Image 1 (cartoon, rainbow, N blue to C red):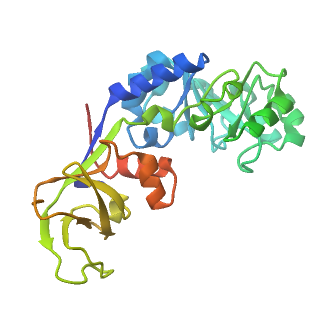
Image 2: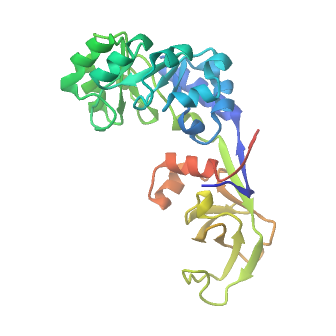
Image 3: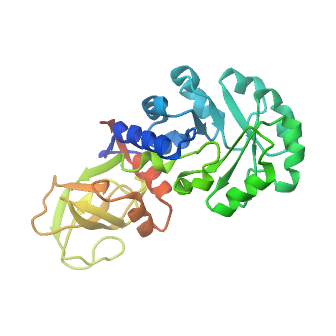
Length: 308
């Protein structure tokens, strides 16, 4: 996926800060900010610097994500690499103040001196330790922290049953469980909740036409339509948008352009908002038949980023 030079991605770091402060205040437990995938497309270097005052640490997927932006030296906050360890050199983790997530005895032994964190499988069935092997991995790595990827309260309870009272810190709640007091445990790992409302993606109509019959590759029919210079190579799908502030839709998306439903008064140069101004990730995700997380990552990477 590439960025279209015709698409403007405005990132409000003040909104990200406000979200981080609110999460810390409302949960009352340490916040481990998820900045994997370049902070969901917002830019991990800028985001981590903006919120370091309100978080206790950061979560990435691979250790390289923290190393590439020199996260420890820039923020003074530790990192948890929550993906499967692609590097089994404990000294690398120690040098950069990164703790690896482990799920097997072999990983735990290899990374023991890096203070590994046990990842427990409570239902996702990937990159995590089956509950019947928890004791072995805990002992092998001398783990003092454990977590799970939970989206339901029963998964939180499974973690507590498997490891509760045996480690110093437990965490399970990502963005979807921040509203559940019993899920907060000893820390929370917000991702999407940090970025909600912080991104505005827009472009401009490059032409407008009155429909004269079937148009585009799909043969759609619309009374009036326009075109923008962004397409599926930039992460777009057909779905909702705003034209001059009113609800509209992307009728057909091509490689590097897309058709937009317009009205007679619309003209080239008018603004088309792809995200923001009341058009939320959840609304787009429903039309795209995917998750809000994917919508945010795609649209945040669809154009040229600027920080406001």
